[in-house]
Every structure is written in structure tokens, then in C-alpha cells.
Length: 346
Image 1 (tube, one colour):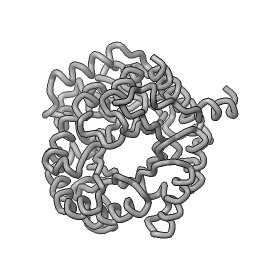
Image 2 (tube, one colour; image 1 turned 180 degrees about the horizontal axis):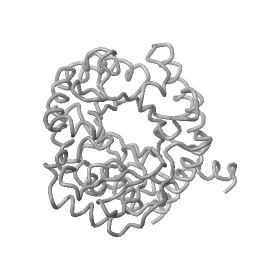
Image 3 (spheres, one colour; image 1 turned 135 degrees about the horizontal axis):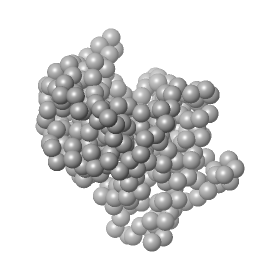
Image 4 (tube, helix red, strand yellow; image 1 turned 45 degrees about the vertical axis):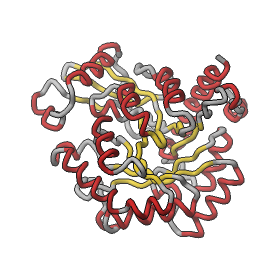
């Protein structure tokens, strides 16, 4: 598809009335991690996403918005308002015991409170944050990291509530399965904590993405969506992330169910395409980090893997990565837009 024709198609509106009077339309957006190598400043990124037809732009890390300087945040807000885009902002780990946590930036509470202030300035309804990654399942029981994250969240509750900002915790990079994130949210307080539901990350915890959606739909504040492929290997299984529509996890059904179960919530594409990650679950030592995973959930994961076929072992770093990321995002945005349009017409 020619780039000009693609942008025209992507920007076409899905009529809200087609979803029915009682159901708010999906707000299709972009997580800027999708184009992390493109070198765009926040205003340039907003312009690019507007051409795609995005209604939400998710600045999932501080680096994507440039800085938390008030003048910069106001400039981003004003530009987003001119484009009719809803900005969301985010940060990385708020768990003091996570390997991802950056202690040099202050306590977890201090970092999160700065983000709450920034969210109000830039016009974001949420602050997205994470516990950590799969590495944290190996350094200590994940329950201990959850407990520490809950403590941080409770310590900033009054500030978040007074600011009318909710904290969206992501199931991130293999740190938590959906029932573990659900427990974190309920322990911290559903009145100000919810989920940033990522469709690609459940597979990194041996979980079917559809199980994660079923579990976390009532808690969803925002989302990251991408397609995945999973298949069996002699040692266990392998997972890779692919363009929307190229995987084998039933992403079309996932998107349709998200639209039905999470009406009005942002469905933001976080497209990441690189080589597979391998899970040697046939090695007994592998399970040291996953002893709390229910057998029925693993059975769902394994059923997906058994239906998959091996994918090429593509490099994680590709030549001209920024341009390739845009190609992957644009193809995925067009695919998702067309899928949602078909849903609206049905």
C-alpha cells in the first residue's frame, strides 16, 4: 500500500453510532515505544500519530516526552489539544526491590509523585508504571515485590486521589501474570489503581493473552496491544512479537473482546518486532521462578504453542531500525483500524 493512501485510510473515522448508544467507541492509540528508534520529539511524535488517526498517544516513558519541565509539558498538552489527541504519560519501575528500579532518581514515592504532578500539567488521566521484569521473579518471590509495590502505591494514594489521577500498573516484560496484577491492584486500592493491560507480555509468563484479558478487563485503565507467535521447541516453547495479524494467538478475537469488555478505554498499539525469546520449561530449574503459576493456565499456554509453527530467528537489532519500526506500526495500525471498522459495520 502506498504511504499516502495508507495515511488517508488510517485517518478515516469509525462512526461512534455504529457501536451502539450504550457502548463508547474504542479509542485507538499509539504507544510511542513502537517508534522508539525514530528520534522524534514529543511534538513531532504527536503530528506523526495524528496522521495515522490516533486518538490517544501514550508517552510510556519519560524519554518520549522529553522532560517533566512544566513549560515542555504545557507545550505538549496544547499541541495535543489542537490535534484532538488525548495524551497519556508513564514511567518505569516503582518497586524499590526491582532490578529495574532507578534509585538515583529518588525514592519510588518521590518519582511517582513527580509523575502525578506532570500528568495533571500535560492532561493525562493516568500515570502508567511497572513493577519490573521477568528478572524479578528470580531474585525473590514475586509476592515480595508485589508487597513492596503496594506499599509505595498506598503511600501516594492521597496525592493521586486529590489530583484525580489513577495509576495504571502494567503486566510488564514477564513480571506478573494477570491474577498477580489483579491481587496488586486490589491490595493497593481499586479507587486509584488499575491495569495497563499488555497483550504481548502474558506469553512471557506462560499465560494465554485471552486469560489475561478475562482476568483484568474490569481493572483496565489503558492498554498496550500487539500480536504474538508462540510455538513448541525441544526445550519448551518460544515466543516472538509480530505485526498485528501475523501471529497465532487469535489477536482479532482479542481486539474484539477488548472493545466489548473495556468500552471507551484506549487500545494503544505497542508494536515490537524482533527475534524469539525461548522458555526452557522442560528444565526443572526453570520453574524456580514460576512455582505459583496454576496448571490450568499453563495448559492454555501450551495449547497455543502446540498450534504454532517456528518463526525465523530474526535479529533484535535491524538496520535502519527507526524506519522499520514505522513500517511495522503503520501496517499494524491499518490492520487494526480495518478490523474495528468491520466490527462497527456488523
